[in-house]
Image 1 (cartoon, one colour):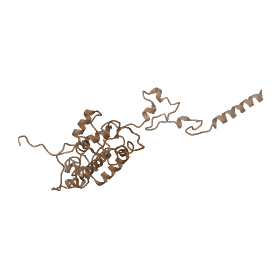
Image 2 (spheres, rainbow, N blue to C red):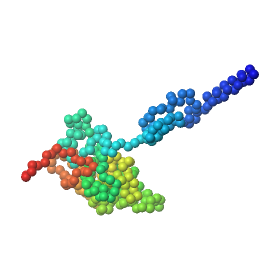
Image 3 (cartoon, rainbow, N blue to C red):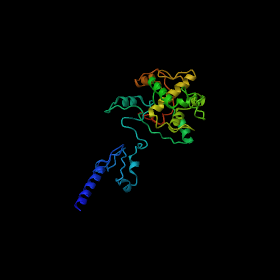
Image 4 (cartoon, rainbow, N blue to C red):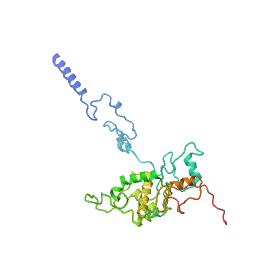
Length: 291
C-alpha cells in the first residue's frame, strides 16, 4: 500500500513536471503560472491581445478587437499646427500666419482642410463650379513632387503626361478593359480644378478614391502637375515663374512671393471665386452703402 502511494506521488510529480515545462512556440508562451501578468485585462489603444480568459467581450456592447482597430479622426478635424487658408487670401494675414507674428508659433498654409462635397453627380458639378484656384502657389519643387506622385498613383492608367495611355490599360500586357480619361482633352483643360480634385477624393467610374493615399497638399501638387502637362500640350507656360495657360487656376511662386512682399507691377491672376475647400482669410471691411 505504501509503495502504491509513493508510486502515485512519483507519477503525479512526473506528469506535473512535463505539463509545467510544455514547450513555447510562435505566439504561444507555453503554460503560464500567472497569465493575468502577461495578458492585459485593460484595453490598450491600437493593440489587440485577445485572451480566452478575458471576459471583456461578454461585458461590452463592442468587442475588444473592434475597439482596438485604428480609427479615423472626426470629420472636419484639422491637425495642430495647420490652418485652412488659401494662397489667394489677404497678403498681410498670410504673412502673419507664415511667420507666426502675434503668435508663439508659425503655421503652414493649408496643412489640412475638410472637404464639404458629397459623392454624387450634383455635388461633383457643384465642386467643379466652385473650386477654381489651386490654394498652393506653383513651385518648382511642388511640380517635381506632383510629377512623382502622378507617376506612382495615376500614370499606370492615365500615362506619364496624362494622355490616357498608361501601360495598365494600353499595350500588349494591358489588364484593364476600360479606357482611362485623356486629361489633355479640352473638356479637362477648360474644367475648373474642382473637377480634378473631386475625382481624386471620390473617384470616377471604375477609378477609385485616392483620398486615403494622397494628403491634402499632395492632391493639389498632382493637380499642378496635370495643369503643367496640359499647358505643355497647348504650347503654353505653367511653372513657378509664369502662367500663360490658365491664370485663374494657379499662382506662380514668384508672383505669390512678390505679392506677400507688397510689390506691384507683376502678373496677377484674373478674378476668380474663393477656393471652396479653403476659404481665404480677409480683414477688409465692406464699403459703406451708397458709395
